[in-house]
Image (cartoon, rainbow, N blue to C red; front, side, top):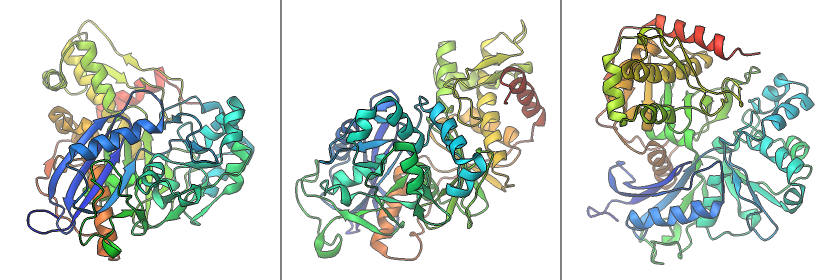
Length: 484
């Protein structure tokens, strides 16, 4: 309980780079305390590192003694394989591990093309999807594939651990995260076990798929930071309950209060553009992933591999801080004098170019300045995300801009010019963890919809559209990275 007697909930964001825990009041969403811990770098990480970071973040957030409900949101797609004893078979392959690109191409061809995949599961798998990583495992590590008795996702595994790892049949997931595996259909609400078996060569145990307001289990007393004590007035019988949890993008939509008609653009380790929809989508081009959301609706989403780290890389090249990068960008004209950065620094998922590299286009003596490069980096990233927004096929009235990259004031000011519509930046916060906390509050409330937490401190940015910037970027992209 908080000092004023309000029930508290905990939301977890186990992202690629770190684990964040927020403790909020269930009824109002008011922040009470928070904590965080780092994750190791790399695209292959043992889940034990996530567990250690979660426990550290819980401790730094003051423990869970007074918390009534917990929900875990986490990075999507990561492949966690468990043996018959529930032990991790091998380090998890994360969403940004592209070694399964060839496996993705093979799977698409084997089913009869992208249209068949879009019809089956709403998305065309690329290297990030779990199903492609399982095919890679079967082909390159057959012994690990043979040992695998259950497959789950990062948020599934952490929720299961919080519940005391109650056997493989105790694994749970939710609609949102399940929709990113490549073997669960948002349209039918069922697993496509035939696709999973085609990929892995066997049929492992799969998590039970929960709705957003369903209970996944009960928090075990021995979780670090909880002291083994039960919070009074928590769940049934005084237990601290575990919500279904969800994927990071689904939680972010809850955290910012996205409504129909909004498009959310998130600039984190990955970049995403997504919208809440009432009907499922199926894009045979593969650009739009037809995900489900955490509320019973749908979340068409376009994801990119390259986002905030493009800004980090540009700042590193110039030997300046991120704040200084923004100051330099303001010194250059719109369009950076024709200098364009095509930001495929880690390969790319959308468009599907896993082996691509970044390119500078239009470098001249006049544009060979720190200011022009800083402007080109921010505009290149925003143009890349604007392409993702366009792929959704929507005409939103506004764009909600979130994620670590959205902290840049220069980027916020330039974004309306590139996106061609007003940009709204919600109050600073841990949107994914906040969304998880809101889901935990929803479980306690037992209402048809999540509780309407009120967001304060929202900022709006307007600017005259600059179509010439987008046109120049499209020219550079076509020249340097022609898409087959």
